[in-house]
Amino acid sequence: MKNFVRVAAVSPKVHLGDVKKNAEEISSIYKRLQGQAVQIALFPEMALTGYTVGDLFFSGQLKIEAEAALLKLAGETKEMIALVSLPVSNAGRLYIGAAVLHGGEVKAVAIKQHLSNGESRWFQSGSEAPDTLSFGGREIPFGTDLIFETDECAFAIEVCEDVWTPNPPSGRYAQMGAEIIFNPAVSNELLGKRVRRSALLKEQSRKCLSGYVYAGAGFGESTTDHVYAGFTGVFECGDECASGKLFSRDGAEAIYDIDVQRVRHQRQKAASFFSGAKGFGRRIPLTGLPARDKTLLRDMAPLPFVPKQEDLAAACRDISDIVVMGLQTRLEKARINKLVIGVSGGLDSTLALLFAVKTMDEMGLPRTYIEGITMPGFGTGTRTKGNAVRLMEALGLSVRSIDITPNLKQHFKDIGQDENNHDVTFENAQARERTQILMDIANQVGGLVVGTGDLSEEALGFCTYNGDHMSMYNVNASIPKTLMRSMVTCLADTAFQKEAAAVLHDIVDTPVSPELLPGESGEIAQKTEEILGDYALHDFFLYHMMDSGSSADRLLHLAHKAFEGVYEEAFIKKTLQLFIRRFYTQQFKRSCSPDGAQAGPVSLSPRGALQLPSDLDYTPFL
View 1 (cartoon, rainbow, N blue to C red):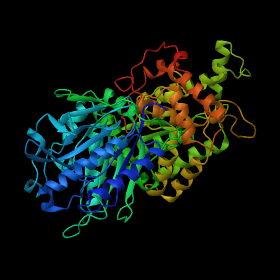
View 2: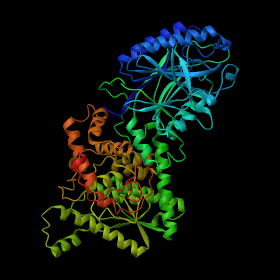
View 3: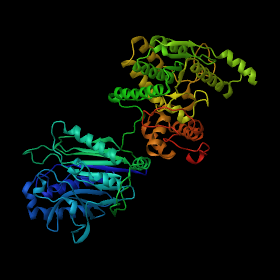
View 4: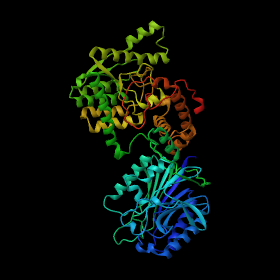
């Protein structure tokens, strides 16, 4: 699959000052990585000599051996790229270099710009180094402005201390077009440092909107003053994606497929990313990367909108705070202190109601200022209606129940609609009747109608135009269906009393339904996922379409990886086709969607997040 680059961060066992053994370690690993279809392999700082050899760096013999070993290693390279660090002498000065080996040659040497404490005893900063280096009988590029270009990606190299400085070179490299940053490093271990280092690398990959590959020196380095644990890691756009084992006598490695298309898509969407960029660097072409195998070496979460269990409580708290602040601000600016909300007993209206309750609590207003309205119709089930009423009572709201069937019967008579004809008119009339009631009651009490439609419904257009599609402020605007259950469960367990919590848990267990068609004996007749396909798939497609600009073929491939053994291929494909058709044909509903604060990573607001024409033909996107 195109636009994924397989990288390896490797920390081999170190043989201090023994260039031959270090080269043998690298060669052995290199050959093994070739069999794993790795395309670019990174080794630590001073991998050929060891970093802690001290004044041996002054030894001419050590430099000669390192250069000879590098040429031999280069001769072993074919399509795969290896990044190997060593001391490099140029114009009488000594630098910390990172050589790029490819196609049997040393293609160039990138050099360290910022020296750490003590390194200036032996080395010079690369800031004013010559532009070329005579190496192995050839003049090759040398310096701190090198961008390497392959068929699959562009990359650059910064070395160890460079990333710890206030203005790391990787920021400039990213603006020059480098999509992956490689860092051959050393990095001793101290109490708390692994956390600080990971946080730094995650943040740098986020700021650079790039892949970031880091390989630190490990077992075998001198322990006179420090211990080096051999940290290896791969990061992407703010995420820590892979890491190797620390404190291993046998070395460590992290192998991962970086999504270069995601990097490009994120950069194109970030208006400020190239702001202040200067120059494009010297471009070094590297052609003929090895082909990746058909496997995809990266975690592919089936529920990308749902945080990991250990992060869920904090995420729910953050989302709740954002939404409540948004609603509170809207009420104060509009000089309104009443809320009107239709409560169906389903997930969406339940979460919106919880946000409304928390808003009143934050503002110091009584919960009775919330007009909770249940509006049973032809398809309302006894379970959902009962849960709606019990929840509102448990929360201490003003409760109204308005049966919409008499009004609908009259309306059907007025427009000549047979009420036994359960077509789209029959369904949509109920949603519009409910919206009319909510709007009119809001006028009665001087309140604001809280919207309940979620991000998944907005993406699919699974809402009635000018019905449940409309409100005065939509608190669920950026919350997808797959996150709804986790949010309600989390709030039930942490923020509400036992009476309300019991009802909330039952609501979570209730099938999602618009409840617009009559059922038997009060049972739900419509189950949304039987109509649309599973929301897990739709939310997966939505996330990756917005996050990386994935095409239909790419979405299908990623879904196969994420849902292997869960869904049959035919079902995934059918659901994807439906998603694409509905996504592109329902923009007209999103174009006039109400305001609502973005709380999650994806928004479909027409006021900046997603601008599409409402009359697109969806067929080219299948």
